Amino acid sequence: MSTLSERILGAPAGAYVDHEVDIAFAHDGTGILTREALREMGVDRLPHPGRLRLIFDHIVPANTGTTATLQAELRGYARASGIDLSDAGGGICHQVMSEGVVRPGMVVVGADSHTCTLGALGAFATGVGATDMAAIWASGATWFRVPETIAVNLTGRLDGPAEAKDVALAYVAKLGMEGATYRALEFVGDGAPGISMDGRLTLCNMAVETGAKAGMFYADAVAVRHLAEHGVAASPQAVEESRYEQEIEIDLAGIVPLVAVPHRVDTVREAEEVAGTEIDQVFVGTCTNGRYEDLARFARIVRGKQVAVRTLVVPASRAVLLRAIATGVLADIVGAGCMVAPPGCGPCLGAHEGVMGEGEVCLSTANRNFRNRMGVGAEIYLSSVATAAASALAGVIAVPEAV
Amino acid sequence: MQGVGPAVCLGNDIDTDLIIAGRYLRTKDRSVWAEHVFEDLDPALAGRLSGAIIVAGRNMGCGSSREQAVVALREAGVVGVVAESFARIFFRNAVNVGLPVIEASVACTDRAFVAFDLDAGWVEVDGERYPARPLSARMVAILRAGGLVPYWRSSR
Image 1 (cartoon, each protein chain N blue to C red):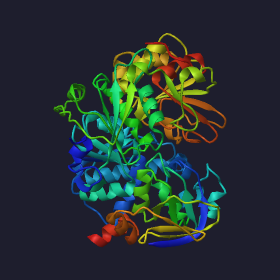
Image 2: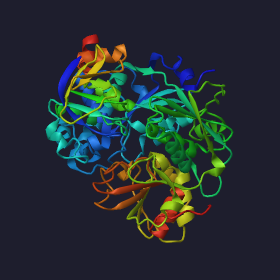
Image 3: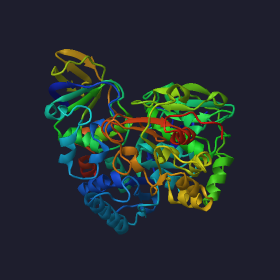
Image 4: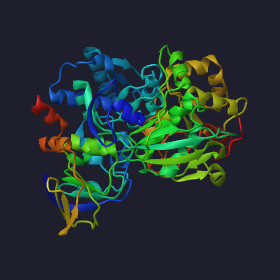
């Protein structure tokens, strides 16, 4: 009768627990503050370096001397304390952690809000701040309040041009930006097994946009196969009848291409309604939609054609990039006139590489369209990869056709 | 834990990008964050924060996990943050850096006199008293110590 969160954390919803963590990671943005906090705490030895990871993804490669110096300091710290470092070019932390590091049933914390992405593998994964992370690195454990759970009941199958991102926008619109605060989301129902691993990562990624602490799928044959491809043996998790605080229904067959319009992620329209909106840039990538399946879908649509607006494609990891090279997907993307940047977060947070100018409009496959996030005075629309591809070709927001 | 100060009223869904923009994260100089706090929301706000109490609406601090957001508020001299509800990472970060957070539903007028008492569980705005949701015992202990770093040092 337990939810996945209750089962993994070993206590009922509402209870406060102290729990060991299996994986605890930070990136170049938050890692530097974690390092500072450890210094202030007087911690010079980390008891469980094998559980810790540093991943450089936010501003890679470094854009200024200051960034480079901070990254050099963190690089030196990783080396000295035995922490595994995924350096610039390796990819986005959540993607790298999904490629054979995180396994079903693990307790995972990341110093990044989108750590909930990793619940797609049947782990309890949640974001924390940098000082919390310092205490976790120093002790190997932390406290949690076991969350109540909202079931997102998926029925039927995706049809036509709709993809997992459209489902994500649909549930965010249904729940609202704080509809799941302090809660976990569990994606269940007869439609869940049909969602690909990449799609599950997209769905769990956006859980935090509803305020949720975690977004989770039961690990099934799809997850086991994904992990096997990354050299990890795992078993599926038995599905239990659970007591949910709330249930929402999503009929996958009824999902059409959707767009979140400025400046709220829960203000969602059918792509049809905003078709024709002028755009200055299309951005495909991020921890939401920079995976191989996304790049392949984008390439299928733009292959042999030319994009009509500047278009930036950022693979989520080196593994994704290598596969896109091997299969010719990358050549199709570059051949269509798109720019390709090294694996990382790219311009999603407005720090570098594709930042928008005042009054400009970006159609992005990311997860946040907060005011000014990608550049002061810029507007961000959020969509699926297929909508981004159709729009890149049209030069305005356009509705994709079934691929 | 108690505090008093003039109110700075904010709306719902104030995200951490608005509190401190991503372009200011590439430093560890805390004064930079205090200087640019709320720059993209209202550049005039930074000058009003010293000694003030922020009174926000629902979902305060949503979005990114960036701890620079709560550090920026603390370094700018904010005494505490009252909100109808908080995003969970922001809430936990605030406690960890020793910034009092008070979950309460209050009517706010800019520059109204705000007082809070976390132990007693109330907030007052211009003398009108509202109940505050209690914190967990651990969070109270961390706040009382001045944040997670001093809490850690004193508990070893």
